[in-house]
Length: 516
Image (cartoon, rainbow, N blue to C red; front, side, top):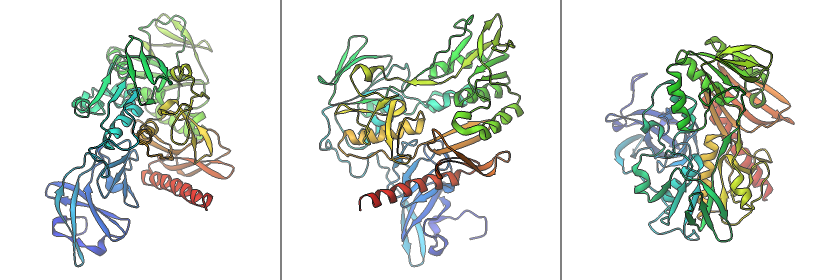
């Protein structure tokens, strides 16, 4: 094989070209394929992640799993199945044959719709029916996992949204920049719910839950009985009163409907003021600036992201935005609207065709509180994501769980965390008793710069920067008591995967030592 050429796997490659834990990208007919090695086993799978088509050849092999460098989706090399979110669909597989000292890739294998251990009968110890309150990341992930694990009982997803589950991260990112087809936003094609026998109830709010009678009541008077219940109600935006602002002046970003309104309003606007300098606010600012609008950001903190990522990373993102023409007003607040302008607390008036407010969210715990579940800055769950009421689980933005990595009870408002919790909750609804031990992960992307974050640091006493922020190539470690509790990376996607895997390995080592 010539240097730099793409190997044709049907012609075989030498066994010694592929080291343990390594992979090579090549082709089979007209398809890109990865040939991977785990010990003395060889696997051939599709080269593109089924989430955002990330280049899996640039990912990481952990045992017999393949992890995507973009958003840390994980696939089984043996089955092709998506083991954990944000990917749901399997990657393709091909049969591999070793002949003497060469490895050949043969015919494509059939795709798997269920986990290998699932069968057509209902799993033992599973409930008579499952009701999921919330049609976001956690709710959809749970419903999908129930079916993939072979559960054939009734599954109902009740959502206050007017749209089927969609890719919420895009609401503040790509969707505001340019029109995105519905099929790109929908997490599942419309026929999925009918084919899987999932009842999707939209535009519906639950008014009460009766844990004893195992019944959910809707505001319209309808009722649903459940054998098991998953609360995935997410979070509500924090409303910020702006004296003098009309409804047509100020918009929030939480739903796809919100994004549609802002996208349309931006088409005739020249200048916008974004109130809030955390992830949603700055993602919106970057998106609207990319459309040519004059954008001003007003934030309470001295630097963007300061509470979440520290002043060093905050200063980097501020400089990034300012280099693209965004004007930042830090350490300021908006006190009102006066005619066609927003007035700041120092008297400054900024012309604004409209405002976008992204000042945070609160966990939507009212239903859980009404039902008598234990609440502590969220819905308290155990390591299996079960609430204080047997048979009722919680996942996503509302769930406060015992995080084994930090040793603290934490709540995290991030997309991938919600999806992975929905998947684990579904398996536990079916009696698997699986601890939720995933390392928290999130990402943000602004002006083409992506930051990946693994772990969880509500506070830290030291920050170590390896590399250079300005060069967009660095790893920022957040430490507490000498221990690394979280790491943010820019331009180091492979290292982010390694750090995540290292945190998992440390937990396994600790668990083994504890149970000796």
